[in-house]
Every structure is written in C-alpha cells, then in structure tokens.
Image 1: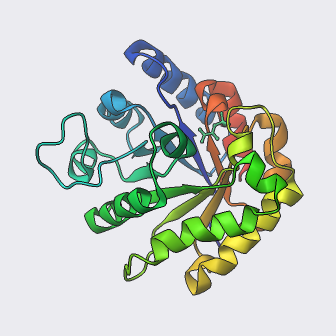
Image 2: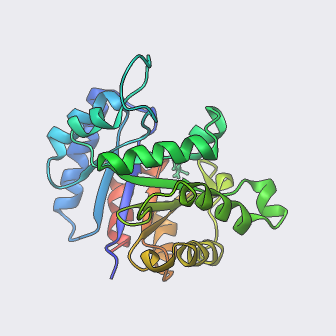
Length: 246
Ligand code: PEP
C-alpha cells in the first residue's frame, strides 16, 4: 500500500511574510480537516529554514533543485549537503522548467539524481513529454528515455526511496490538465518500467492540479498524489487537494 503524497512547488514566489502567512493558513486548514496524506513543501532556497522551523514535523521539507557538484567554487549553486543541513529531506530533480529554461539535459538530471541519492535526499524525479511529443505519439518513448537516463547511471537501487512526478509539460501552469485516463496510462507505464521497485514507488501527477480535478485524478490506481505548482500558493485550495489524496 502506497501512502498518498502531495507536494507543493512554490517556485520563485513569495516573501518571508507571504511564506509565514501561507504556513499559518495551511496549519489552520489542516487542523480543521482530517486528512492524512503526506505533505511536502518545496519553497525557494532562502525560505527552506523558515518553512522547516514553522512547519516542523507536520510536513516534509524539499528543495526545488540541487547542484550536481558536491562542494567547491561553483558560484550560485547549492549542494545536497547544504539542503540536508537546512532540514530538507526531498529535492525536485529535472523539473521541466529546469530542463527547458536552464538547459538541463537528461545527463545533467541523472547526475543530480545520483548526488541526491548518495547524500540521502529523496529525489522527486520530474519527467514528461511536450505537446509536440504527445501529438506525435511519442509520450511513452520520451518518458522511457528520461527513466533510462537515470537507470543507465548504474546506481544500485535507483527507484527505492525515490518519488517520480509525471508532469506533461503542456499541462504545467497552463490550466490544461491531462485527463485521468491519459495520466493513468502513463503512470501505469512508468510503474512497469521501474520493475519490482515500482510496486512501492510513489508516482505523482503534476500539471494544473486543482481542488476540482484532484479527486478524479487520485481515483486512478497508479496515481499516488500530486506535485502542485500554482494551486499550492492558496492554502484552502492546497488543503483540499491534500484531503482529496486520502
Ligand atoms: C509544477 O510546477 O510542477 C506544476 C505542476 O505547476 P502547476 O500546478 O502550476 O501546473
């Protein structure tokens, strides 16, 4: 049995004051609900400690990115060790915005994944196809390629203590969501690709998840929760999504 997980990706939004208010509103929202999904918050780097201190043990803390380097003269980069030091236990790896806006290749993503694993962080590996790739009937091929880039690193158990987020690029921040059937088809395929480990790996769906589409998505047998961008910045909406994952 896989525990549902709902992860918030705050991206580059907010201020300290905004983060404190959102956390206070989330606390109120969770207190008046009875939802037992695992919750993960991935704030911008400067607010990691703030979220860790305020949210304490009720939510897990994650970062949105990490360096593929261990330490050294890499100006502007943040290492796995620093993330752990700030209390993070998860890290997003290969988010489509990192891939498309910052040129992160499958190879770089695989290096970051390996560093996260070897340091003890749980990677949330983001994979998914573009609109052109879907329209060309290449969705499964693309997703398999992104998984193979990780598998070919020769890590001992790459899919153990790893979370996968299937995020069709055309659905991220666009208001367009994959239908539950489209998402389920890819989630099932991903699980099959993971072999035995796939039975217990949490596979999240990401792409314009909101309170009003979450229930249908989470009803699919291979969807174990969500990675939520825009809607994670609104406490009421995010609490509803978390409760829908129960
Ligand atoms: C994301 O940032 O991973 C994401 C899915 O964003 P949104 O929910 O806004 O589409």
